[in-house]
Image (cartoon, rainbow, N blue to C red):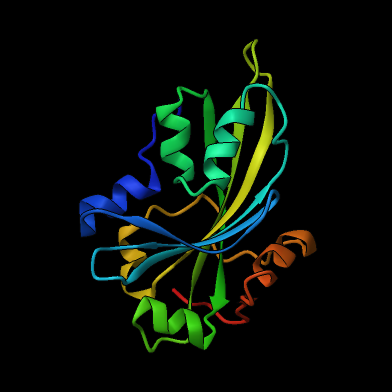
Length: 174
């Protein structure tokens, strides 16, 4: 199991209970807000699901697409996974995100991660999901940074941001 703290657990330590507000979802794409009890979004998550039919993940994937939190579902189901925080990029915040973050800042950062499911023998795994977690500007300093910061995502990853109307910022947002 991944020994790193879940993003949701970190948010709960900071803001209390966190719940999910699904903005868009189907079998391969999910756009959600992780909201606190004051209904302030503490993260906008954009998830592209990959290998969802594998027997190790199929049942949990059904619960996730039924509205459960992704990380907690993996942990509660005892699914052997790793979440690799790959890079961070600057993003422009559209008005609707600024409103849900309760910020007037125009830019923030998005952390890109990949979740892989371990499949049997050591070193064998498959990609389950790619995630961009857009962090509100006011809490950037509280969220772990990936090893590579301020990269420009490749076209297919930038497309993932585009599903939520998020664009890459052309300036350093730190």
